[in-house]
Amino acid sequence: MSKIEKFEDLIAWQKARELTKLIYQMTKHEKLSKDFGLTNQLQRSAVSVMANVAEGFERGNRGEFHQFLVIAKGSCAELRSLIYVALDAGYIAKQQFFLIHELTEEVGKIIGGLRSSVAKQRKRKNVMV
Image (cartoon, rainbow, N blue to C red):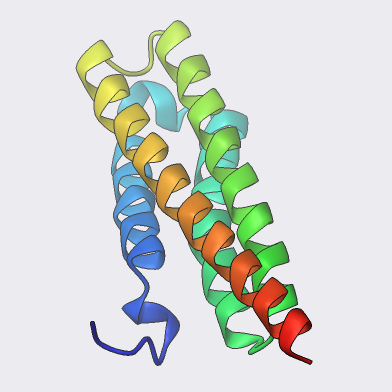
């Protein structure tokens, strides 16, 4: 296993980037692109996922990293909720919905696992001090 030296090495960030790219592609389509509020919120929540993973990692503190992962996971859930709105409004097809939904679940699980790992590291450090 190679050492994680920068946020770009994190699978959580890589998958969040992939998700963000899909959201930006999705929001370019004619119907959805005209709903400025929903488009903006979809994009902002997707960007929030990857940005919070990156910012938390770069803080260099396990406690802060954990907190930013909590926020990233929440933004991922927000995004998953918003794609239901896009589906229900008829902006996206079921196939596209399922693809993005599956990826939001995957990203959420990866972030959740990373968050748990960071929490365990924090506890071990506190016990050893």
